[in-house]
Structures are given as C-alpha cells and as structure tokens.
Amino acid sequence: MKDTLGTRTEKKIVKEAKKNPIFNIVTLLLLLSIVVAFILAALQQNWVLLLVLVFIGALLFLPHILEKFANIDIPTGLKVYTVLFIYTTLFLGELQNYYAKYWWWDIMIHISSGLAFGVIGFIILYILYKAGKIKTSPKMIAMFTFAFALAIGALWEIFEFTIDSTLGPISNHSYMQTVVNGCGLVDTMKDLIDDSIGALFSSIMGYLYLKKESGVIVKQVTKEFKRKNPRMFKRKNG
Image (cartoon, rainbow, N blue to C red; front, side, top):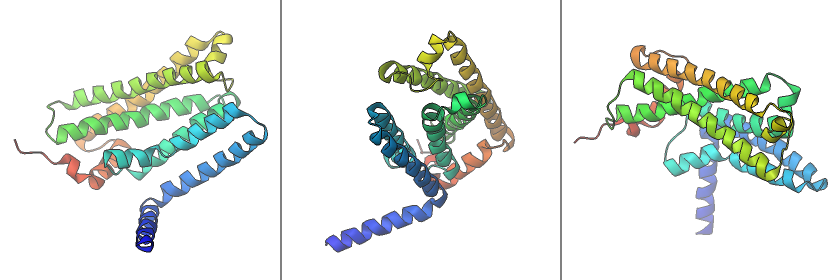
C-alpha cells in the first residue's frame, strides 16, 4: 500500500514537472539563490533578513497554490512572470538594493506589473462576460482592467509601507528611507504613474482583443487561458 501511494505521488510529481518545465526550472533556480542568501544570513545571524527570505521563498509557490485553490490552470507565461516579479521586486530590488544601483529598475517593475495585473483583471471580467454572468461592453471591461491594475498597485504601496513600518527599512528604496530623504510622497506617486502606464496599455490591448481579436500580450495570454480552462467559459442555461 505504501509503495503504491509512493508510486502515485512520484508519478504525479513527474507529470507536474513535465507539464510546466520552464516554470519549474525558473522557480528552482530562484529558490536556489534564495537558499544561498538564507545560509549567508544565518551565518551572519541576521534574523530579520532570514524572516524576509523565508517569506520571499514561500511567495514563489503562489502560482501553484492559486492553481490548486481555485482549480484553474494558469498560463505558463503568467506564472513565470509572477515568480520573476516576486524575485526581482523583493529579493533583487529590496534585499540586493537594485533600486539604488539601477535607476530604471523601479520603473521597469511598476510598468510591467501594471501590465500583468491589467491582464489578470481583464481575464477575470472576460470570464464572467463570456459565461453570461454579467452584461457589459468592451469599454467597461477596458475601464475595469485599468482600475483593477491601478488598485493592485496602490495595495502594493500599502504593503511596502507596512513591511517597512514593522520590520524597518531593508533598503535605500524603502518607503521609510524615502521619507527620511524627504521624497516619500514623490516616490509613491511616481510608482503609481508607472503602474498606470502598464495598466493603460493592457486595457487598450484588452479592448482591441474584444473588438478585433487583436491586442499584443492580452491576446496570447487570454487564448492560452481559454484553451486550458474551457469549462470556465461555458454559459449555464437558465
């Protein structure tokens, strides 16, 4: 019985690995670098850094958790972006101080995140629209896409503020550090403006997808999501 259970588990793991090889390889490489940083932090007895590293490592499993919890199959590209976003923002950006080393790092992170969260917002409303659960128009879906991405951007700023307030500033880019330097509000507004640029792009592409079956990125991700989750787009009678 134990052998049978072990064999089933092994087959399930192998099947999952073959299903998303790119995502699994990327996640493994990122986790290995975090493990190295964890060991170094332990040797230095930097307990706050250890806690942050454990938190970042746990977040890398977020796409897998969402798939299991929501019973969906997330497009590979979106999963890869999610783990890269977590890694580049928290590990490289905050802990490795890339925000200070590279002036464009923060801009890249926020514009790309605005785009990605916009795509997610679009897919959420598109599912409801295609399943016949809501009646709306392409313009309203585009507006929701923009608002959803910008709302997530605002929540991220709150998250950064909370982390810095409770654990203390862990980089020169942290909110508390920018307040000390006298530019906290300006930095937050720049981040939200960058978020809005990415959000605007995804909302326009979402609108084009609904009207003309075009739209860069949104078209590819949405079609892959539909192919992997056809049951979510079926209209229920009555």
